[in-house]
Amino acid sequence: MNEATGEEWRSDDPASELPKPRSTALPLPSPSELDRRSNGPRPVDADGAGLLDDVEEFFGRFVAFPSPDALVAVVLWTAHAHSVDSAESSPRLALLSPEPGSGKTRTLEVLDLLVPAPLSSVSASPAAIFRSLKLRRRCLLFDEVDAIFGRRGKDDGAEDLRALLNAGHRKGATIPRCVGQKHTVAEFPVFAAVALAGLGDLPDTLMSRSIIIRMRRRLTSEVIEPYRRRLHEPAGVDLNVRLALWTDSIAGLIAGAWPVMPAGVTDRPADVWEPLLAIADAAGGDWPGRARAACVELVKVSESREASLGIRLLGDLRTVFGEEERLSTETILKALHAMEEAPWSNLHGSPLDPRGLAWRLSPYEIESTRVWVAGKSLRGYRRGDLWDAWERYLTSSPESPPGPPGPEGPWSERRTAAKTIRRPLGCKALRENAHGSPR
Image (cartoon, rainbow, N blue to C red):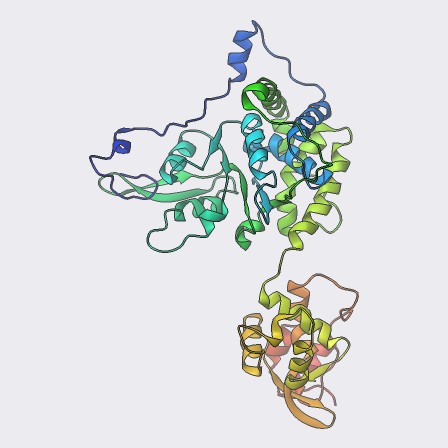
């Protein structure tokens, strides 16, 4: 029985005879094992900042990161992988690039030396990963993750991995699976530190939970050392053990930390960066400042990815409206079609029409209505109906209208009170709109 998927294994399947999954990677020596070899306990690094500096120097020898901020984030995430039990959530480390040969796999190879209990998913089955996480905490390293999210259909074997990646960022997260001949439901713990490498972007649900590093091919002027595991493993193992001892010594400090976020970093980005900033604060030195600078820059990277068509439409509508209170549908569509590099003039082979505009705005609770334009009653949209969606889904912009819309035109009295109250217009405006706006 595949404990992760509930599927029966054939009796002639050699894997069915294995009671537990086995990792092909050799386990790294534990701190106690190294203590025994060195005839005494290893001292804990008193200088956390110096330790992170050493990890940064080790990474920098083998990988040309796109920016110093990216390197800072990878170093802090590596330390977080050792202290994941002290965190409420574990951000995914997403190493993404448009083309192969950009240093993603090399970064995972170096991480394999530095993180605790690494498990590569390239050759591991979903059942092995689920079982391994049930046995003990592992750090998952996924290469070529774009292949996992590119498969669909009845023969898709990556569904369990996608569920694990989406759910396992939160402490205490479990996924139920059927186990045994009687299909008994068992809860598999899936909380783990995860690093991902792949081409293109990940699904939005995963991107929003990730620290995104946009890897790129290095220039000929960017010189790095050739990486050979058998040559560099001793230094990597030493850093691994030092990180384990140091993070264990500050576990209580990290667990109770409430790091101050940089201005403008809130909601999901704050949730993603909180564990890393807690480690930077515990390390001291220049790491708290460098970590927050990296946070600000990499949050911009995550927000700069291509928006959905719905968000793109809201942003373009905000540009079209400017300071106008109301526009006809015909005027809006002409302006949208005239936008250079916008998709609206050729959307799936035809220009956006009134029906398509209404359909794309309906998920945001925006409907067309009668508007009074140039002395005529036309079908169109009002800034007041769009303002709520602009505030909720778009970032602030100096070109956007500075505040909520004022009283509407002659057709506003036909709006119901419920329709109007969902916009934060202020008490007086709400009372006027509920009983009919003044003309």
